[in-house]
Length: 105
Image (cartoon, rainbow, N blue to C red):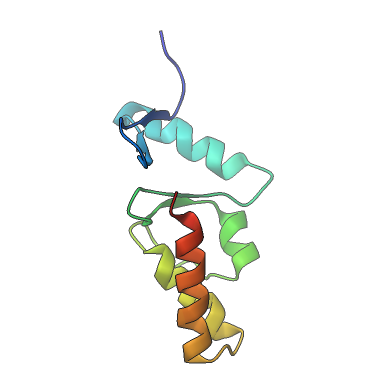
């Protein structure tokens, strides 16, 4: 019997990204683990859209409770953070492009 809250499977082929499947019955358990963590945690899907983030992550990154919700693209979160640091628009887009290039295997 498998009791993990998250099942991670790597798709076959070069450059595959992990795929996360969370069973409906396991979501409450996963939410409790995420909320109870002593570190800020955020989980994104293969399209870099937010699946979940705990309150500590939101607090550490300076996001209000309604600023990031499930489905928010990582790029939008990065852009918001950089705008708050008074980064120029050109520098924001360059920083995002650099960060995304580093994520590519």
